[in-house]
Length: 355
Image 1 (cartoon, helix red, strand yellow):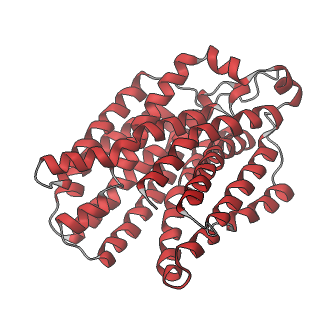
Image 2 (image 1 turned 120 degrees about the horizontal axis):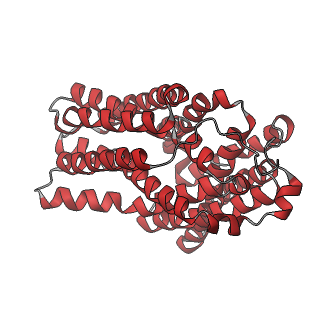
């Protein structure tokens, strides 16, 4: 995928988060999520039939809109449908879907790309459409969403009245996305260019650090239920600082793999708290919109990361390790500070607006 296609898909995600989020607040989480998943699956499948680059770019833009709504709507439906004491664990489980998907996609790419090519890889993306059948048959509507209250409320007005919280959340999510992208985007380049590792070795290290990411998300998400959301985010972010030398400045592949495992354990450990933290901070009648919208805006603002790190590396004679360390260390401290000064809403009762 070209940089233009990637950026355009990313740029359209906040639009999708807002559109589908408002739909979820107005008409319910469950039907919106079903439409959302179906649309991005079909658009992904259609991308494989693109007759020209222009058509492909247009489809990727539409895909960005559809994909942008999924995280926020899915997270709100999940968090509102489980007991409050299970939110931390489920938050970590939910966020672990990202490294798990990355892991599975790597396997599918390695096995199928030589056979089916890039068009076939797009067509495989239709598989999530099967989730619509499962959601329709097995997933009930959120017990916190109320049709009568939704009909009376206006999501846009609610968001405007909470603009300070919105700005804080966008800044926090920008830092969080710098944290994840800053430790992932150019890491394969760092391993290949600066350490001369083969694609097979880089792929193996990627598998190892994605396992670390899954474990970290589950552990720290669970711990947030006992010790609080902000405290666990701060601990995970600050612990990542101790891993930076091993992760960015080691000389051997074994130590690099260990450093990558521990770094992603901490990074995705902090991320494992994000779904529940954003949903608990969110205004009740805008919970379908708020978490996904601030998350996707933060993701867009952090999209400069790869360019920034590449520029730092070039300025210091191709030292990618230094670029990785500077960005990861800086945003870890910023996340700790922002979390410390932010609000805590652990265990808040959803659906208060209904009462």
